[in-house]
Image 1 (tube, rainbow, N blue to C red):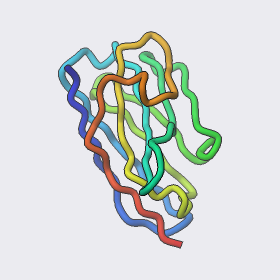
Image 2: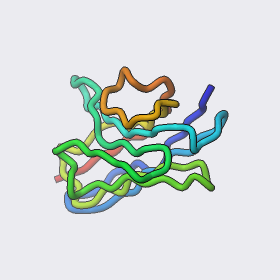
Image 3: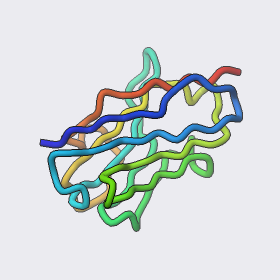
Image 4: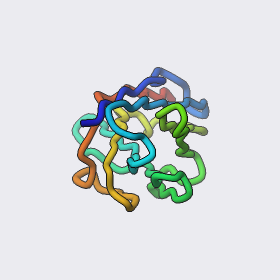
Length: 124
């Protein structure tokens, strides 16, 4: 079992930056592929970014590429997503996800463990 706790959400203006954090416990952190997803009201949960076990491979949704950066600190059991140049359409609940997969994954169904989510609201 893996327990994930997100933090760092909030209300910001368009163009601002935020860094979300997700602390993990319950399993050796370096054996987990990690991802960030988001869900806006009335919409399905969508992929944001993912990072491999050793941090060497990453993938981003086209909508955030060039603005968001995912990273991990295996010594701190924490994964981050740095979000720059935020837009109102980035408003959503952001979820951290983890899976013992060897490969990076972009679909929600590929992840076994989820955090409770943190709200990000971007005003125009």
